[in-house]
Length: 109
Image (cartoon, rainbow, N blue to C red; front, top):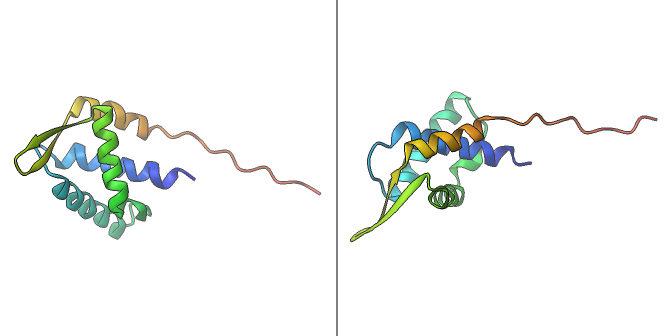
């Protein structure tokens, strides 16, 4: 049930860790995540279409700001964001660990 969301957050973490080296805006973030997700979908590396949702991307960015993985600064043009690579690597490691899901038990007659 939560697999698409966890996978979406993993893709967003991957984008933040590999693609962002300087300050960025929310518009730049959304465009970059969509580009990465589109590439992964085209190559078949993922089947997570939820990551293309701007709501998921904005929620992830807001959650990462609350967790301290991304710093938000107010500028004249709006807000800019800077990635805290150490915190991102630590939290991304949590998303990487997968909890095995047991098969549902069925009644035997």
